[in-house]
Image (cartoon, rainbow, N blue to C red):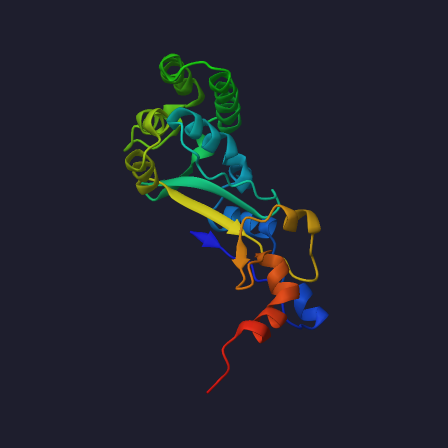
Length: 221
């Protein structure tokens, strides 16, 4: 489930803009309020937070895996479980920061020629230490599910994880009132233009859309 705050890419009266603008922190705060605190603000992390996981899986499988290296202000997300009428954020029972730091260290060791055969026993031994099963969902073996993703990293295990969780995300596209060039430099969503250019999404909507469409749109017959 992805929440998409409105981007004011057209003209709007300032009073309306101030009244209707909603930001990523606003969305996160509203999620906490409307779930009676079951999905707290501190359950969310920038989308780029998961890059160490992608790099770990890439090193384990020896194949390139896409990395969501967007600017941290572009989006945020979390995973939650739903059980017996209540939400259980993954942060309730997984030390996500310690877990991600562990993956980054392990990836560095593998890149330093430590074999996959030596890495697997370490993963099996260390990962459960970051998980408090008593605080997690009762209907799923969380340890085995996460280990399955890490050990194999294939579509089957990744799909199994996503079938048992609900991803919550939010991405805020920029407008002329909050344009940030550093964010544009690290954009992960682009428009491919017929003349061969690739333009970041926010830059395209704010500066290039009219000229590109007038140049390449087919004329009405």
